Image (cartoon, helix red, strand yellow):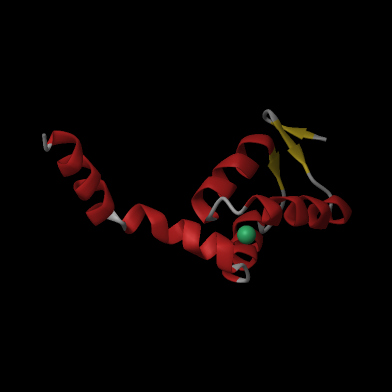
Length: 81
Ligand SMILES: [Zn+2]
């Protein structure tokens, strides 16, 4: 079954995909973007959010973009002789 360019995933395959995704630990926004570009199923967003909430590694990825201090520090370091 196709919906646009995306494959609609039946419930039986959904779990397999979620298990594979959990291994990558890419964080909720990246995971959603990746999944949405290839496949679709009802409740996709909710399932991914639940998956990330249950995974410490994914949660730490989610927190990474907030570290503006680290970016500022490395930018400063690059400009210090
Ligand atoms: Zn994870």
